[in-house]
Length: 75
Image 1: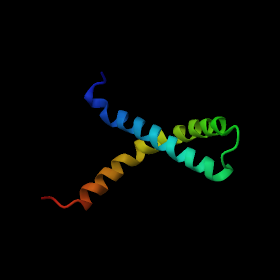
Image 2 (image 1 turned 135 degrees about the horizontal axis):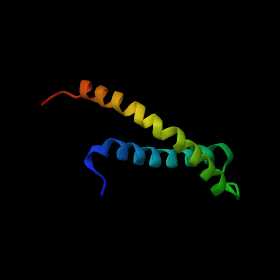
Image 3 (image 1 turned 30 degrees about the vertical axis):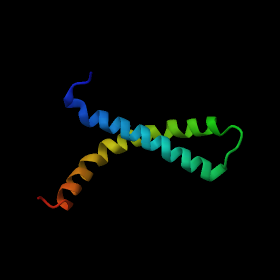
């Protein structure tokens, strides 16, 4: 198993993986439709999207956490 100190990196990895998967699929189908080679086009788009998404999540997540802390009222 992975050491708990890497929790934020593992979270960012899976968040970027799943979100880039979903968004690249939706955008690819929206832009070109369900063409015969959609799988290959989408996988290429997904690979590119993940390379951008992972560092983006790593950079944005701390800012989002701070924003959420400010917005959530303490009980």
